Amino acid sequence: MRDPISRFLRPPRPALPGLALGCLLWGCAGATAGSSAETAGAIGLGPREQTADQQAHHVLNRLAFGARPGDVEAVRAMGVDAWIERQLHPERIDDAATQQFLTRFTTLGKTSEQLYADYPPAFVLQAQLARRGGEATAADSARVRQQGRQSQLFTAELIGSRVARAVMSERQLEEVMVDFWENHFNVFVGKDRTRYFLPEYDAKAIRPHVLGSFRALLGAVAKSEAMLYYLDNWQSVADSGRPVLRPVPPRLAQRRAGAVQRAAQQRGASPERMQQLQQLQQRRRGVNENFARELMELHTLGVDGGYTQDDVINVARALTGWTLGRGAQGGRFVVRPQAHDAGEKVILGQPFPAGRGIEEGEAVLDLLARHPTTAQFIATKLARRFVSDTPPPALVQRAAETFTRTEGDIRAVVRTIVTSPEFFSAAAYRAKVKSPFELVTSALRAMNAAPDATPRAAQLVARLGQPIFGHQAPNGYPETGDAWMNTGAILNRINFGMAVADGRVPGVRLGQWPAAKTLASLPREQQVDGVVRELFGGAVSSDTRQVLLTGTNPFLQANAARADTLLVVDDAAMASAARPRQTAPTGLAQIVGLALGAPEFQRR
Image (cartoon, rainbow, N blue to C red; front, side):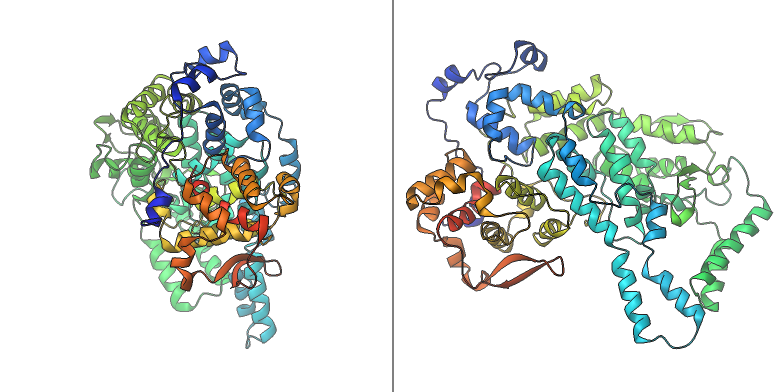
């Protein structure tokens, strides 16, 4: 292992002996066994370099969060193309078991208003104590800390449900697309009270649209409490001196000032702070460009999308007054006429006449969603997710053409990508490095893990470097492998694999893995063969096979000083932790742990 990090990053050399004969046997130029001629014709298949077994593993690693025991055989029996088409229509897939399991997460169906009432932040109790007067007691401090923990419970349920769905749902492509779009339209859970808006953001803005119309998805996100609050558009109003649709009556302005004052009093604000708030209330905040900039740079056109700073300003002006019914406390989306800049604008060379209200913002979303540069940008990101860190330009172009032709039909664009010859090329096989979320969920699926209703598995995702809803900047987590791989990350991933095999991860018991019963009593070499067959379809590098046979990982040996802990989950605290390694797994558990930490399992 002269260059161990690049070994994790570098796609393996495809093991495709007798490729031409394999294509004759398995029909690389057409539909795989089990798919109908009608489906093959509708999809428009091209030549494929992967063998039939590789195609089955490939779709389960790209359109799903990895294979569960028996999944490869099920995909082969159904036919790869029929399985893809089925996943493209999740509404046709019975997922009753997942829906039943989700009832354990009692906060998922609640509105932001209900969540705030049931799980108020700690400062609410602090304000109550301040109004009571007197010195705070130790019991008071304990109550405040407990209130702070309670106010995070629904967030723990949301992130726990994300992992549970990815592990157990039959609608795997839908969950992959939820992961993609919630990263594309990133919202940071740690900003003020944003966490109260995230359950509805997941349930109403993202999930209903992941394979539908991009314009509908864009509109749902733009009007969501989470995005309006996270990127501050709820505070964006027309600059002083600009025309508005309706002026603010003086009496209404006075009532608002009084409401701000009363709210500050309820929070126990000092007289100095009260004066500051009154001064702020007297000054109009003006246009906020945050959402407009990210709408163009990250959500639609891309960083090199051909727009100017004037375009950003005019998009922000067009979206002034797009706010929340209860202000900072959230509430339904509303447009305030008295806050909307009603002047003329020019955006991307297109004139926007004066005097329009909400329809002006809708026209901006129409313009951006249908723009050719948006088609190229979204096609590139989807091709990067499903095919390669550097997606083939010809594939991106075809996907962009599909986006334009179908007016942003996400399902059609994804179909173009995942049925393409580039998707099924030898170069694409195991070419993508798994993110921490993909690694944890794929390991749980591979080991036939029981679903977990706690946030413990999600905490492992965070410990490996990808807290769910935890990326502070609006650009989301990276989609390329180099961002996830360094010496420390590789050590954590290897140790995670050992922790899984050693029963240190929730829901996983090696004895529940169907292959364990057969392999447990076999000699070491046959156990290695069985693990490689079950987890990798029988193909690993000679280096990986040697590690599994000897039980010795040269990467761990070279970094022994940093490799003295195993990832575990502290059941009592429901938090990720590390503890000194006492007895490392042996036998079959050791082989499985090393396999889960191998470069082949780190890629998809």
